[in-house]
Length: 290
Length: 315
Image 1 (cartoon, each protein chain N blue to C red):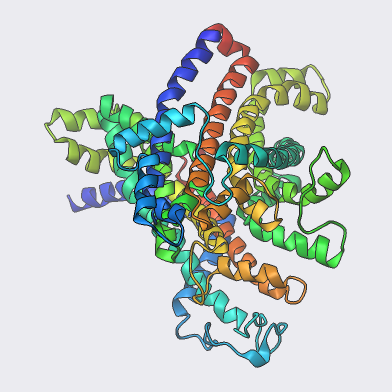
Image 2: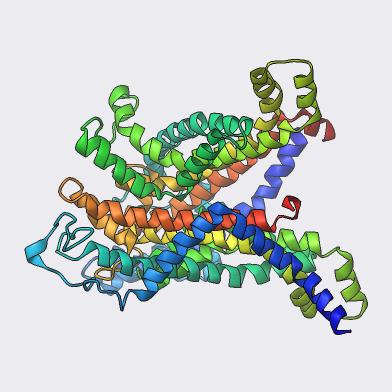
């Protein structure tokens, strides 16, 4: 009996482990994961790393080129660029993850409801989603961030809300495909209620594409946060953020190009990392690739 | 065909109405009271009461929406608080600049993205494919405002080849106009080129496995002819519709590019309006972008129908 249970447990665990194995064999995804992990580690360890205070100004060392004392140089008021880069990673990663969590937390339930119940509920949710999708992501985020007031928290909320329709549409489409499956019919036949069916039978089966989309949306959200901070609608000075660092840097391009190079390179690398993981996950979760 | 277009327009109407509601709500949600801004520093209660009356601020919110929607349908998007100009004429004066930028970016994207996608699919698994994919991924990951800053640093500051900012109308001085727009257009076009490349590649890979391509090869046709005449013609369909859809997004993408290169277009208009709390302009720009986006969706659908004879007979 134990042997049978073990065997069935193995079979049950197989798709997940197969996905993991495929993901691990995907070199690009692993490179992406390493880059992201490196930045996550730097961001988490920022308080204990032996780096300068990101807000400490030094009027005797303004716009110093990279040197042994300041590896990535200093900015227009003598602050250490490396230190601000590492602390800025916190804002970017936090914004990417939190805004996508907001989008998933609102978008997925609405998508589930629209796809599962159909009819009028679906029509209303779908029309609202279409209308929201007609307003371009960044313009919507700018308008919302302007309404909420400039701050990192509000930028995250604005980006999260702007990304909601993406998840509503994706989840709805997936639910429509899954809800006619035999196992859902079976669950209904044994008298399960709507919520248990949605949570136990539908959600786990629509989860893979949502996970892929979430990873790719983190990449978009990081760029959006940097864009809002660049425009002055995100993280406020003197708190460090890659976007606001770039905003200041563009005024000192000929005198201190290093101020512009590093923050942008940071955004580029992290976004590329998430895109690589997202692409890898998509391939690993695609049953046709087996 | 006509029936399809008519049906498609009818479907777009509820979306447009909802968009107008969102845009109207946006005005109500924005911080600050526009009437107080209009009343100036004195804030004379009589003037405030008069302004509230004139702008129907004392009416119920639903009525305010209907009045606003009626004005919008008549082409009256309000007046800019800052310049006192009608919003519609303000948008109309900025739109050609952004459209020029968008068209040039699209040209860049098509000229780079589609050939790269074809080449990548035709040489699947080789270093060409690998390199094209890497460039596409970089194009998708690079923040366009950083790319813009880096190009200004390299091309304008270090090499002095092109102006770093400014704008000249194409009709006044075409050469100068192209000089000022070429860098922003390239910057705005990179992400699009990457998207087009990826879609062209996957569409081509699907088509290259089709029986008619195998037959064409079996007949002994040259590889290039098979790829361009047989495969690409069929793979180009989804790419064309995607291009139409992306054109709508370009209008939004222009926000940051115009900010960096100080181009007085649509994108800069909304950013300036947000900072000046010029509500009517923010509303007008969001509404126009959304209408443009819905219109491009409609064009994409119709284009798909025109280009795909199989769908036409199915109608």
